[in-house]
Image 1 (cartoon, rainbow, N blue to C red):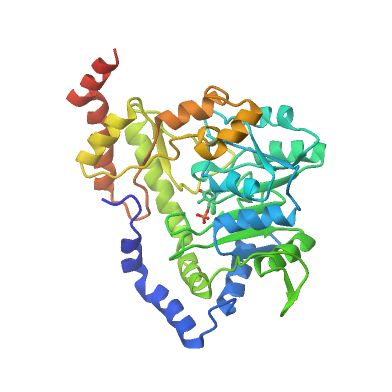
Image 2: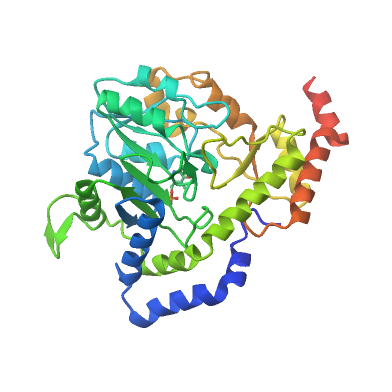
Length: 379
Ligand SMILES: *Cc1c(COP(=O)(O)O)cnc(C)c1O
């Protein structure tokens, strides 16, 4: 069993993917070739945004979004400590300060009730993350931002394909950033990402930033980056878009099946009724996680932990935490989650027998002989 089975996906969809890649090899326009624009048009339409600006990674999409908003030294951006490092890392890279607020217990996303107290005269933006594929409470976040003259950047790296109150993830803030890292719900064969916006001016700025601040060939208006998506990756994404909806439905079915089998065994994920998840991860909570991980591994079941250490406790942010007065205990919900979460194998081609094997192994790990032993050890 694989955690994410990209080889199986390729075997099943080989003809169309090969044809798209071959077309690029034949025309030879590897940088900003026709597939890049075709993809941007398709993605913008799908998400319902006026503009899509593709990028070399999800990290670059975040960097470009922050740069487009002019975020830099002496600015603060409010975000969550329970996310992949890239979210806060790009804020720090620009000389600004990530200001963490805790998450909600049910969704693992930023708690909107904690945002307002964290706003200072230095705050410029709010950067909610749609963890595991489920959109954060974006309407509440947008309302707070509007009240304080702030901009919202949506970290939709895990949630491309999800819906929130009838709108597509990626189009829920002023700029939405997503990732096409191979294991994300829509993944390419390398690094890739995109920004979405409905603002014509921001879209123009993002396009310049992506290509060395270039207005026209060798005419540079600002400092930018090399943040372009490869034509080959755009071709892979165009191929995969053909069956993305099928795959999204399969992910959702697999998640439902896991939940049916596990809801009385462990804490299973909850998707709020006004939204859907892209199911980037199926993440449960377990006590004695190392023992459970070991038992599953022994049964040939790969697992992962997203994420084992909240960002305020990372070595890279020791200085920031000292300055801000953050300690273990400062963000109790994120800290408790980081000790208990466990992501199970999830990809569109996982078979019913494999799902049952995972569920059965988990039940045994928690309540079988090993499970009881673990509980005794704790007492
Ligand atoms: C994957 C991810 C990113 C970064 O995307 P890359 O394409 O790997 O650069 C940023 N934020 C979150 C929440 C992610 O999961």
